[in-house]
Length: 117
Length: 111
Image (cartoon, rainbow over all chains, first blue to last red; front, top):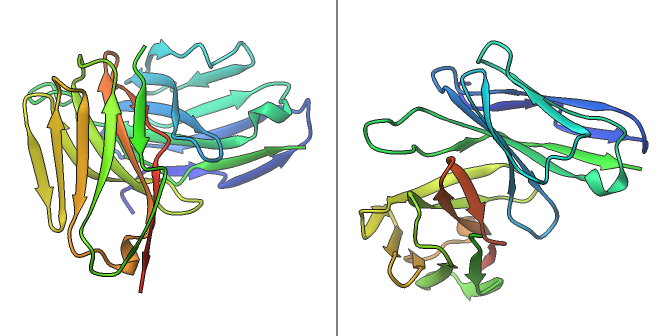
């Protein structure tokens, strides 16, 4: 399978615990994005990497959230001291550079569903 | 701040009917407009991408149009089938390559 993969698919945790999600993008894609989706809403942008550089972070990404892409391949999203309001689907997407034709289509993974009790 | 709105929020049609989903955005300074499909509890599948310089894109029974000046896009689905039942999301790509999504239209095609 050459699509975007995310692990785990589901995570249940207690309030105050730390959680970490992983995203493996399509291998030739150098851009990687994280989004958060709550029930009945469209995804909201969290952050964006080009290779290993984190180029943009949303104001939604509080100081409890940190994302890394150390070698420009897979990425991790960590949430510290989880709160019930963090319960959501966390989606990862990747795209190629597309410098000739402009930004390319983003391909999404299946998501990690987080439930904070 | 870019805002994307989708109308209707939900739609139920009989099989075989042609239908139109609407999307509007407030800031016309976009790189492209994308339509996605999302099945319950799943990730997003890209359907069509319209570059800002284009007017429309077609893929099979799907046709998407873009009018930047009026801030509108439509997704036309011909001869709908029960397998088309899903949530359809439109998203405007703006500076920084981030997508701004609408809340989606939940489509149900009845057999």
